[in-house]
Image (tube, rainbow, N blue to C red; front, side, top):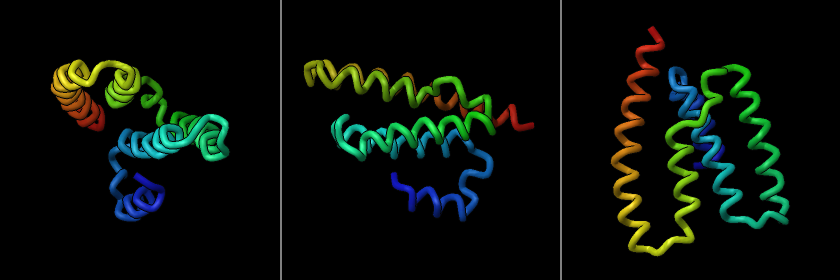
Amino acid sequence: MCFDMIFKRLEQNYYIYDALQLRNDLQQIFWNAKDFNRPNQLVYKDASKLHSLCLSKISSHYPYLQRQTFAQEKEDLYRKLIHISPDFQKRFLRILYSTVTQRQDLEKERERLLTF
């Protein structure tokens, strides 16, 4: 994910009914910047500042997006799994993926129903 892709999606009205996806795409950019850079590097520091700025702006326009999403829960767990044995990671991620996918489907249906 990159800003160019987000800009293209904005021009194509990709996010017109899905602010959650916009927030997740923006977060992915900042997570990547933090994952691939060290905390003392400028890119990491800038990503942290921009991340909080973007989240506050999005949250002010879409207050229902303030709670943690299933994608965030999955990402948080994945970051913790980095230090666990590869075999356990695979088994756990398989279970997690099926659970998160079901929960995401439920969340999408819930969001769709809330738009009526």
